[in-house]
Length: 560
Image (cartoon, helix red, strand yellow):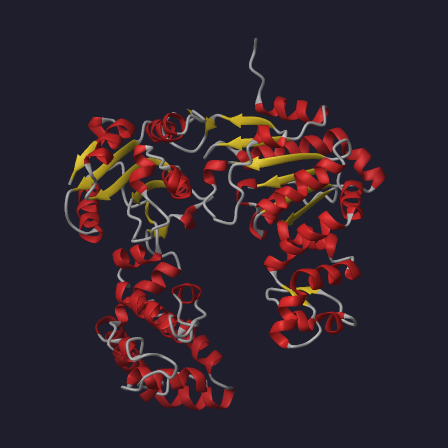
């Protein structure tokens, strides 16, 4: 008997109106299969959809993914591609009366107690809108509210399910493992159960690539009446990398064994050191790999947390300072500096853009920077005033950025009047350049700690944020691929992860969630590698080394 192809299995499910889940291992071409399924459906049933005005609903996780899918089906109007939140809002947002009733049911008591007001009266004459934040008094709901309210409304008002069934005979969910449990319940257990003869549901993803706590993870196909279809090919990684992935996913999990489709041998090795710190051991590994011509400079170094990235990429003190600040002022979060929207973000960007243009001898860019920061009169006067000494000024600035503190750079920029009159930023800069303690901060988390921080750490952070370094968090690489990967196995003091248990397959039921979370992020990290993979661990115990020998092979386990 000839084994059916994945495409044929999906077609059989469609022909028999059988809900299915496609589990596609890393590098298997899941998105390609989703796109081909959409194209095939349009070929088979496109005329019917055109006549009736019904559409295929394709729900995905991000706007970027939605845009990619739309571009690959040539923006076909018979397919409604949207994010989860947009899809749900497109349904519930049209039913304002029911929406208000649901808001009052879910939040009315809490809000009334909090504000001493009647929420129902406040919402009576307001239209509810969907925003990035929640403000019920102004009729605004946020991202989390959309899912919670949708769940309640679909359970309470059967007409919503009928509307979806009338509009969408087919509903596909991309990256199902990252989709909220409540959304999966809406699609499968409410819409699907109530209209099983009218709606076909297909889930595309991979439960082992579930790395977000908000996602459903494994949908347990048998329990939900889904036909499970598996893609066993790997079009991304070399033979050695696939062998390691099969040991993790096949041997440890008893799940998918992939077959490599690339005629590429590659490397997959485990490196360790019995003592030391991640930074120094990583340096040893990079020196060793530097002698290996197959690696070259095209690599990505993955660490679990931003703290570990900071330690290895030169902004450890800056990371610690922001962590101290965040306890007293939420603006001083590491997440904010990475997005460039912390209180000093504009200043960092301004200085780094100036230095970048100066190092490139790009006078046109310098002209634009100064022109954009000052009003016309101020700019003309200013530029004309120090144009003669501009080279000296920028040279001095660069020297301070290279070898001075953040306080030195702040003082220089203020004294040279190089920054526009932004009162808030100027106040902060004055505090950094002096001994003044930032108001609202404890002594331990004062701005004077920033004052003494080497500005080179700001430069290192800026380079990392703009992807000018090989470093990344393991979560940040999902959906990407790189020629060579170095994965640092260290939980960074984060109790939510345990790489030792993931490698050894030691699943203690008491910490089942930690084990699964660790196993999944390990699988995602290692599966990013196209050609060569190096896994690095400091102070592994004997059980871990035994597991490494089993997974990688004894000949591929090296002590540094």
